[in-house]
Image (cartoon, rainbow, N blue to C red):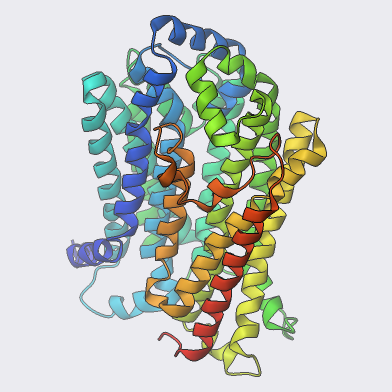
Length: 522
């Protein structure tokens, strides 16, 4: 059909542009899933241990809300329970990033208009974006299926198809949202909000019932994934729900794409005031990043409330399991189990906060490569003052979200307010080291600036999966978070904190110095 002319060429171009993004995210997701069976065998090596875990989960509504219900005591079923929802969320995030990047991002930058002037069909770009996301989800599904086949072929196929189904569904969600909004940033935010709502619905349903039968659970695609029941008498008909939803959203996206002009949307951006109200580069940076700061702030506060509410039940979940206790102590220190759990969860939020600081720092790169920075710098605005506005939001925003996470912990746990807030804030030096590396990469080699994502993801994997896999201490020490005092519970150590702050300052200074001396990217 003429509306699809050029799809193959655009698909090859999209895959070439995402030759790092897609493989890295798929590899991270696959590693997270495939590393779990051995970890679970070490934690719950006997049928009695696994049966005890099922009994504990049946009576612990908070943990069901966080992870989901357990349907069987096999290692495969426990793997699907422990990482299924989170692997589905990661697949959805990858898909929405890919689709928005190759649809609304291209239109917003003006490249789509140039492409559309050639022999390219009206829906070719949308089709290429969906195929690129589909390819990423297909590879993820195949790798998970192959890696878990030894645990049960049917269960491995079910989990692989379920993860691919969640990713594909949110790819089509992003495709619909991209037709509705003029801003790529808003398209990503709205699709992420839909994903967040899906997680909340699933959590609410799972906290109410222990078998995934709640209406709220069935309203969420993540609930469909767990109700597929991989490795536990699979419900193959649930895959039909994914197929119907994907088909309906694809049809809607195609219909909307055929009824608007390139660059336009069905929800046009509201025009600003006739007289500008942004008096400085810092005010402009805040205007551009305030939505992200708000979203991360809400998310971290709610995460703190949830994890704080789980703290009382941490000891019951671990029980006499020495292996589980050892993992918590490697993540959270050698203090009592409750303090170790709090330190581990606070450290996990610190790792996630490093993703925020990278995203915020790289907004400088986006403004420069899109050409929006040049008109600002053509006025009486120096490069350092322009960059300082964004960096203040990046580093100050990370302090804000960790403070809110601490307040959430206090609200959920109700004890040790001062110690918990101190534990959250002590994560900042490590977070700022990651942000400093992003600034250094951006200033010295702007083409390599997106590699800061790889640094942040590598540090996240070391901190998250490393302790469970018994990674050598030398590997764990590669993460700046490994050198922080394990608060609450451990003694405060100012030496490592000072060193990390110094490293962050040196990296930021080096990046800004390089930014002053190089040409802008065109």
